[in-house]
Amino acid sequence: MFKKQKAIFNKSLVATAILSATFSGMSFADEKAPLVIGFTSDSSGQYANSGASDRRGMMMAINEFNEKGGVLGRKIETIHIDTETTPATGSRVAERMITRDKVAFLVGAVSSGVANAISQVAQSHGVIYMNTNSSSPTESGKNCHRVKFVWDANGSNFAQAAIKNSLETYGKNMLLVTNDYVWGHDTTAATKKIAEANGANIMDNILVPQGTRDFASVLLKVQQTNPDVIAAAVGGDDQKAMRSQIAQLDMGDKYAWINNQQDWPDVYGLPTENLFGVFGTTWYYDLDLPGVEDFVKKYQETYPDTKMKVPGNVFFNGYWATRSLLEAVERAGTTNNHAVIKELEKLRIPAETRMQHDDAWMNPKTHQMQQTVYLATQNPQPSGKDDMFLMIAHTSPDQVADTKADATCKLESFEDTPVYTP
Image (cartoon, rainbow, N blue to C red; front, side, top):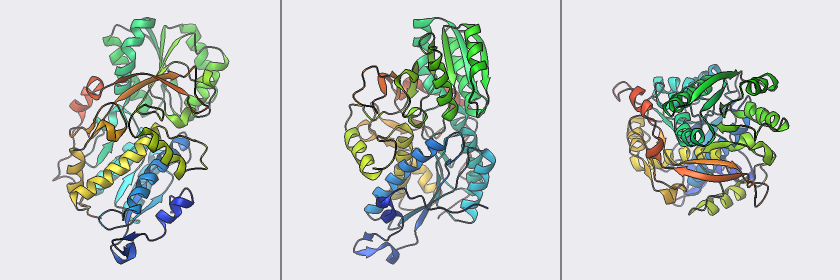
C-alpha cells in the first residue's frame, strides 16, 4: 500500500506547500482548486541521493511560483511516492497518482527504465510528464512520447563531446564498462558507435550488474585487457563504489577514463583522487556566467540544512523542468495538455537566463532539451571543499545533437493523445 506524502523539505517550504498564500488580495482558497504535481522520483535504490536532489530542484521552482500567486490563480501542491529505482514500481506510482490522486502533471526521474515505464502510463492518460534526469538515448528516441519531455543530455550527447579527443590523445584501444540495465546498454551502444567511427578498437565490454559493490573482478579484467581508454557507463551508488575502489588501487591515473556522465549526487563528498578521468555534465555551480551566483545563494537560503551545500546538475534539471512546465501553463493560459505541450515544443531559453553558455531549446521532434554539454575532471586546486570539478570544455547543442533520436522517435499524434485538463 502506498502512502501519500507531501514533498516538503524545510520550514520555508512548509509555508509554501501547506499554507494559503495571498494572490491579488485574496487567499488561494478563495480562488480555484489547487494544482497538484506528482513527484515520480526515487528515495530508495541506486538513485536515492539523486532523487532527493531532483525533488529539491522541483520544490524550489514551485516555491517561486507560489510566492507570486501560483499558476493561473491556483496554488501548487505536491505529492511524492517512492519509485524505488524499479520500473514496475514506477508504473504503479504513475497509475495511482493519475487515477486516484488526480495529479495535473508528473515530474521526476533518474533511472531511464523507470522513466520509460512512467511515460507509458502517462501517455495512455494524456498526462504531461517531465523526465528530469534520466539520460538513455532511447528516452528521446524509440521510447519517446508526445506527453514526455526529457531535460537531461543523453549518453550520445556526452559521448560525442568526449570520445574523439580522448582517442586522439591517449590511443585507439578502448574498453567498455557497462551498468547492466537500459541506460548503461544504450549509452554504451552510442559510445561504441561514435568510438568506432573515430577509429577505435573495442577490446571488450564488461557488464556490471546493478547493485554491485565489489568491483575486484571488473578491475582485474581491466588490468588484464590493459586498454588505452576506458569508457564507463556506470551510475549512481554503483559508480561511487567503483570510483573508490579504482582510486584505492591507484588505477585512476593509469588509464584514460571517460565516465559518460557525472551526476553531482553520485560523487559529492568523495576525495579528490576519486574524481579521475574526464566526464560529462550539463551544469556546475561555479560557472562564471550571469545568474549562477544568485541561483546558488537562493539554493543555500532555501536548503540551509542539506548536506549538499551547493546545487548540482540534477537539482538544476529538476528546477528547470518544473519552472519551464509552469511557465508553459501560464503562456497557454490553460492546463489543457494539448495546449501546454504545444508551448513546450516551441520552448527556447536564452543562455543568460538558463545559466549556460548557449541558448537551450526543446527539440519538437524528440522532446529532448538541447543544451550546452560540459566536460570536466577533478579540480587539482579547489577553492573549497565543494569545488570538486574543473570545467575543461563546453560544446554547443548543435555539435552534440543526437541524430539517431531524430530518426527513431515517433511521437504519437495529438489525435492519438487523450485530452487531459486538470
